Structure formats: C-alpha cells, structure tokens
Image (cartoon, rainbow, N blue to C red; front, side, top):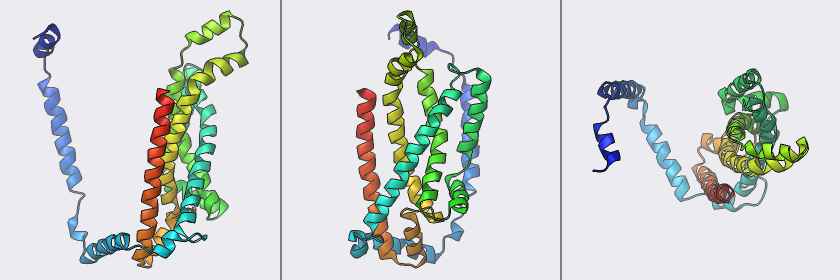
Length: 268
C-alpha cells in the first residue's frame, strides 16, 4: 500500500453526511413514485400503442418516399431549415449577451443583470414561445424560426460565457507590449481562441434544436410535427409510422455528423 492509498484509507469518513443524503434521495424517490398512477392505463391506450408499433413496421411508403410538399422528405427538409436558421440567429444574438455576462470583460453589476436576463429567457418553455410567436406572425415556419432563435440564446450565451472567461489573457498583454491596436487584439487574440469553441457549441445546439423544431410543429410552428399530430388524431397509424421513421433516420444522421464535426473542432 503506497502513501496515497494509506492517506485515503485513514481519511475520516463523514457517515452522517452520507446517511443524510441517502435518506433524502430515498424520500424523494418514494414521493416521486406516488405520481405514477397505472390505473389510468386503459385497454384503449395499450391498443393505440400497439397500433403505433404496427404503423412503424408497415409504414405508408407513398408518404415516406413522396417528393411533393406533403411528403416526409419535404417536411424533414423544412424542419432542418427551421432549426438551422433559428440556430444561426440565436447564435449571433447570444454573442453580445455573452460578452456582457462575462465578469472578466464588463463590470460585475452589468454581468449580473445580463445573467438574470438569460435566466429569464431560459425559464420559459419552447412551446410557450411558440404559441406567443404564432399569435404575432401567424402559424408557419417563420414562427418556428423565431422560437428556435429565442430558446437558443439562453443556453448558447451561458456556454459562450464559460469560453470567454477561460480566455488566455497573457496573449493580450503580449500584444499590448508590441503595440497592437484593439482591433488587432480582437482579430488575432480573441477570435482564434473562441472561434472553434463557439462553432462547436453552435453545432451542439443545432442538434438539440432539430428535436425542438419537430415538437414545435405540434402547435403550428411549421415542420413535421403538425402532420404527425394530425395523423395521430385521425388514427392513420401507417402515416404516423412513416413520419416517425423519417424523424429517427434524420436525427441519427445529424447526430453522427455533428459529433464528428464537434470532435474535430475541439481536438483539432
């Protein structure tokens, strides 16, 4: 037994703390179980679940392979477009908010107020934003783009701040000593450090927004969600299966691709 192992072995153990945490977790788990009510699981619900599985196994191939505006392919492309454009807009708007939230860039009171604003933005659910924008712009993809942009700002700015606060400030001191201007410091000191990190965060957020865009269609904000809920309400399970297959394939492709790009950006 080496020195480190001996120190760990003889280190005092706070058994009361462990027991307290364990007791709290058990109580929370027991309390959560009370919210589960299987009595509401009716026979019709089980049959509907079976119908959905049958629809996935035997999808409507005409809908799945159609190339028109009502086909799955077109709806998936529209969903990608909503997620992509919303992510770009949200990423751009999040950058100044991130700098105003960084305590090493602006005074702490300014950073505190900006962070409170970002917390408020993150608090409101995506569907609530979607319903609000639908009232403003009417149902359609534009409402979905605005919703994706707003819900992206909070998370992106928060992750941007972490990157900004980890900047290597010694570079700025070196650039100042050789007489670099403020623009040159930004161009050659800040952007090279933040570009790959920001881009990696944007790709990660786009992956999440693709799922959000699918859900926003349920409230009429464009994308593939609306045809999915219409098909389910009409009990057209073959169409439901086609849409779900398209969504699964799309999300798998985007996730695999985004993971490779993000790994390349982070590791170089």
